[in-house]
Amino acid sequence: MRVAVIGASGQLGTDLVRVFGDRAIAITHRDLEVTDAEAVRRLLSQLGPDAVVNTAAFHRVDACEEDPDLAWRVNALGARHVALACAEINAACVYVSTDYVFDGEKGGPYTEEDRPRPLNTYGITKLAGEHYTMLCPRHYVVRVASLFGAAGASGKGGNFVETMIKKARAGEPVRVVDDIRMSPTYTRDAARLIRALLENQYPYGVYHLANAGSCSWYEFASEIFRQLGLEADLAPISSEALAQKARRPRDSSLASSRLAGLQVRPWEGALRAYLEEKGYLWGIR
Image (cartoon, rainbow, N blue to C red; front, side, top):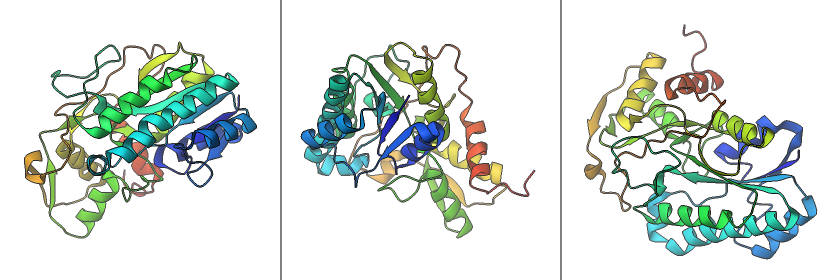
């Protein structure tokens, strides 16, 4: 099975290329602009992959409020272009979506059966991308949240874990919101689950691939410092204090009711694996 990875230089894309190994066809933003329908159709037709994983996204949430047109063209129309091209060559189409398709008012983890209700432009355009992806008969919509991976996030300057470590080591005050909950997702684990869905020919549809459990961003930061044995000037703050342009769901934690036979480890264990991968835990036992 040959798998094309769109967004191969990104945080999740990098790990997808790693887990698929010599079966991966790496496609970076330099190689393809997903907003160009003809370019998408032409390239995928030339490559002829068995499956395409589309990780391309405009994912800076507040910036999406400032430029909703770009968010729509990348997150929604880009997904449509990829889905139609996949349908044309009979390839499976995997679209990477987000917990931000939910409003956070459920009061517990969202499963695949819950109805989306996004609060912001990013969530709206990603939900549209989900629906466009379903134009391909062989489709997987996979939702992840709060990604952290060794490659770091393009356009975001790393990831939350790296930001926390940098601030603590610099002796800076670390103020983190404690009233927003989510399910951290280690990109290496998400990539392995995507590979399992394709290799084991799971039924087409929607899947949640976040690591098990949930936490607030403050609890996430606390666990980072605990595992590293790092002293930090850490204190909680309210999300209202940040005055962000985009509304965030209060509790967008994810759980899956469809991953029968696949093990999803808790986020704490995934964090430790990440810290080991990055070399932070060498000598710490």
